[in-house]
Image 1 (spheres, rainbow, N blue to C red):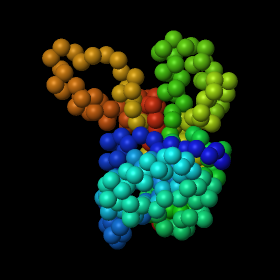
Image 2: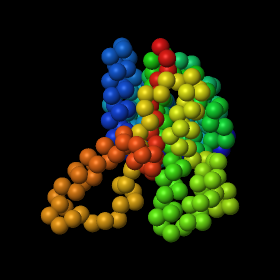
Image 3: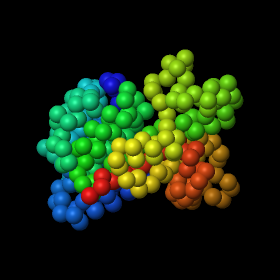
Image 4: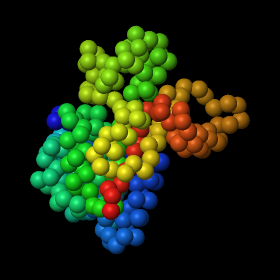
Amino acid sequence: MRAETSAGHGSAAVRKVLEAELGAARARGAEEPVVVDVGGGSGVWAVPFAAAGCRVTVVEPNLNALATLRLRAEEDGVADRITVVADDSDALAEHVRPGSADLVLAHSLLEVVDDPEAALAAIVAATAPGGAVSVLTANRHAAVLHRALTGRLGEAHRLLVEPAGVLSSDSETLSRRLDTAGLTALLSGAGLSVEYVRGDGVVSEILSAEPAPGTAASWEQDLAEFEALAAVTTPLRDIATRLHALAHQPS
């Protein structure tokens, strides 16, 4: 697999969902829920979860990112709650006990690994019965739309017909982009029960309009409310910048 992954985006909507999953784990008897963050980068997700009482293992090969993670964890006083593993997702089984994780994060991971099926198999093996897997990934249809809206129609066309959803001649750092159907099939094929696939960032990252006169005070709230509804409304969900899937390991 490729050596570098990134932690992804810590959107409020995704975080709320994951906090609910940790609440469910506590209800099942996990006083300190076990979280495994695969490709966890600099700790965008790991540090807040550790601060909330979780035991977190971050598997990340990028040493610069891990240095930032350690500094962030020390500043927040949670270094003793985070286990740092400088390795690739290929080695997940060597560092995480099978069936031990209440929540596994695979954020900005499946689009960069060489073999997403193998990565998911390792993730599923680490997940406890009834535990959750959270996947946040780049959406191929959003990439097509964004290029078309900026007038790069040739690139948009090539992305639309390219099976992997990337432009191999354009020095892209991703190996693939997924769409809703492809992501669902990957997770189901790994033996997970897919709870949902939602959009993350439907318009917020491409919006260039200014608030209408008299609406500036409520602009951010209006945008958040629109995003929350659009994230679960097809076809708007399917053109979001990222797709967030939540799946469960069968009990």
